[in-house]
Image (spheres, rainbow, N blue to C red):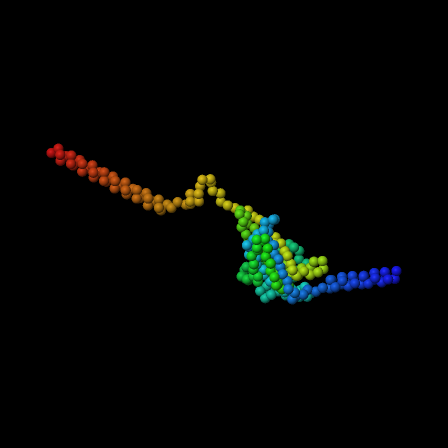
Length: 228
């Protein structure tokens, strides 16, 4: 009985130490990290599309952010923000990036499966932006996204992160052309060319009339001469 109690006590000690170690785990700012992006709509993989990754801030062992020089004017604390607030902040940062023409730190194209993989990243705060893509009669638009590497899952920090990009599909409005009418038929006529055509025809008509009159007069003169 005593041995059973001792084993149970030892198990509880080891189990509790495991919990303490997980909860006390710190972020490793120098840990090699990666990010895998998936760009698709429903089951449609969106390939050959540019994906830009902006490295906004480093993160320290306690989870605090140190924004890089290019982003000091928009520094903020993501902790406690709702998903809606994070989405709005991502759009705000993208607007700031475009306004100040800040180049991306990493850029890749999605493969045939709509995926792209960024290896050798530094833990920190990133903005992901994916270009729009037109396929057939639809345009696919992805929302900019803020994310932190590493992510915390079940009390353990994950340094190899995979995310799906939120994507919307919009129907492209196309001009309706009546059946049997080609694009050339709908073009605006050249009025100046038409005027030149009419003037030319008028001149030709006048010359023909004068020619007929001269011919008639000539024949009439020959007829009068023959009568004499």
